[in-house]
Length: 165
Image (cartoon, rainbow, N blue to C red; front, side, top):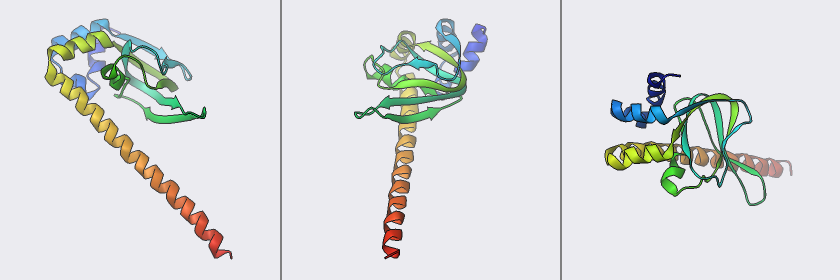
């Protein structure tokens, strides 16, 4: 993939679209395109943040282990979504694991280079933070919907038990 094609790929995600051409070109020069098969891991919980992944195609599951050893799926992302961005801002280690669940193509944007651009241009950092906030809001609404659905199905079971009496 050429530098120009990588630049176009980066612009698939809203926050990168806010960047000037030279900044995107600089990041594209350091970005690695990776084709990944189902089951491959982009990063593991606890790994040092080396890059932020932008999904070009396919699906990626973001998860972490619960205290009792089960897997908690935090999100499933696809085209144009960033994975690991919040960890870059958060201090250096991934707080989840990103696993390819359908063959995928990702761009691995070096975290150090991205951070350099954002340090020089704080208005861009705000664009990335806005993207993270929108994702967080969506995840919270999704969780609320699942909680209500689970509560309703529990209530239905409870009521049906009483109705049989």
